[in-house]
Length: 95
Image (cartoon, rainbow, N blue to C red; front, side, top):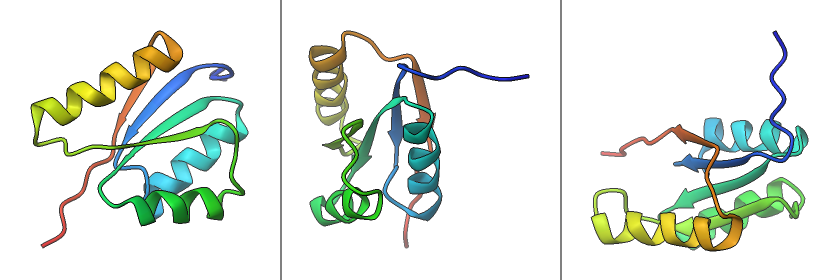
């Protein structure tokens, strides 16, 4: 079965780590637009650099434990793209 994710809007919660960035890369290479959440701006900047600053990568600083922060993620995504097609939940917690 082949999935066509070309031109889909995909949000990755926790997309700047090793696995999340790999998922983002595959999705972007499949012509999807990817929005990743991050807690530290440096993490997102490092991801952009690692992936070659793709035009289809966006980041939103988000604290998923804070309802207002999550609402800002939703609002920004809807304002920019009008929809979310896929949500990938790849959150981790460091102790």
